[in-house]
Image (cartoon, rainbow, N blue to C red; front, side, top):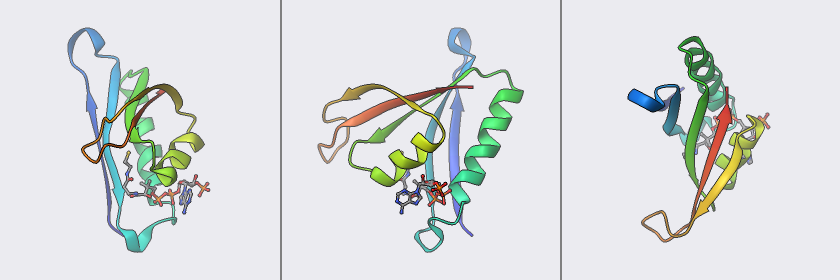
Length: 97
Ligand SMILES: CC(C)(COP(=O)(O)OP(=O)(O)OC[C@H]1O[C@@H](n2cnc3c(N)ncnc32)[C@H](O)[C@@H]1OP(=O)(O)O)[C@@H](O)C(=O)NCCC(=O)NCCS
């Protein structure tokens, strides 16, 4: 199975926060729990490091990813018009840990 996720922890004043930069699963393995396993492990590690909030940006049209984040209780902060290169809007989401 091939999947990855990247999370960045902000230094300095916002040091208790992190950003989920990217997560993706090999198309051959979608829907088999790979992303959930990565997210569970990421959340566990962030909590252990005292991080209190995880933020991310998702394409408005990415319904699969949005369902995934919804399952994890991310809440919608704001919609950013034409955030992506293809003109799609971005949704800023966050979850308190
Ligand atoms: C979003 C993504 C990471 C989910 O990976 P995954 O391994 O398929 O996810 P999981 O199997 O762990 O499923 C987790 C949840 O995602 C949602 N989900 C998964 N497949 C779905 C589908 N076909 N339709 C709608 N929701 C789906 C469900 O909420 C699911 O929870 P459930 O199994 O309890 O119902 C994957 O679709 C992907 O790599 N997409 C392309 C890259 C991308 O869009 N990354 C996010 C950028 S912000």
